[in-house]
Image (tube, rainbow, N blue to C red; front, side, top):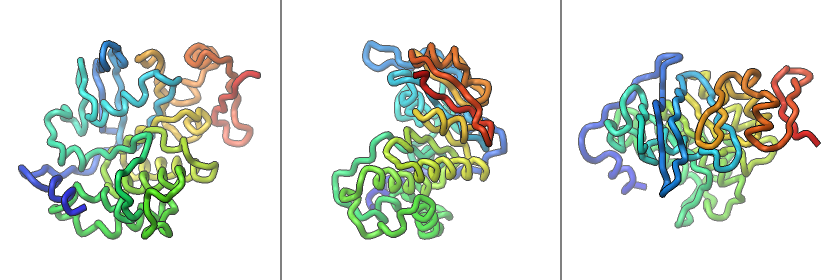
Amino acid sequence: MNALKSLLSSGRSRALPSPLTPGAAAVEARGLHVRLGRHEVLCGIDLTAHAGEVLALVGPNGAGKSTLLAAFAADLPATGGTVRIDGRPVGDWSAPELALRRSVLPQAAALSFPFPVEDVVRMGRAPWAGTPREDEDDLAVAEAMAATEVSGFGPRSFSALSGGERARVALARVLAQRAPVLLLDEPTAALDLRHQELVLGICRERAAAGDAVVVVLHDLGLAGAYADRVAVLHDGRIPLCGPPAEVFDEELLTRVYRQPVEVLPHPRTGDPLVLPRR
């Protein structure tokens, strides 16, 4: 842990992030192309995530959702076009500066050593080492663990947890980082019903506090209930992006997923529910 802090705090002076202006472009792609091997996974993507919103990326397996999230995070290089975070091309930020501006939750949470859970969450504070906000570490860790309901796991070994428990601890690490852009790849995939709702509720709270949240979701019901906007990915492109009520069109989703669906309003909230036609 100390070595990680030393790595992120070393080198040239880091520019600390300022609070995002509500509605500002927090992370954006323009003409984004990403090629993996011989396959072009993303083909000219234009997409912006704004401060104060939850943007859901949906689409079938292999559509490019995780690739787009990784490009937003600057974890995958673009083969064409640009990605900007906080108004600057991602290549203009150093790795420590990026770590202050965006936090990333990958699909799988794996660690090679049996770290205690609290130490795993505390890793999210490493980017702030040596800055004036280092004194927030204990509070940030405690709040993140409470929000994800893992406070009682502190001394337990991360490797001894269930898949769903690991997913919640990994999210706690991301929340403890307190970066203004959250990039979450399928954060609900391993979770039970209660904790799916808990996690998406946290996303809404972070957006309400002014952060930008980009989340990959397979559950279209969750996307319809919690996202401000939904971007549908299909064959490396975005055929439609907008509020769920406008995007969740039966004809479009049937074509994209190659599965007949029906879209119904929730009887109480009116949120769109997407069901396979059986």
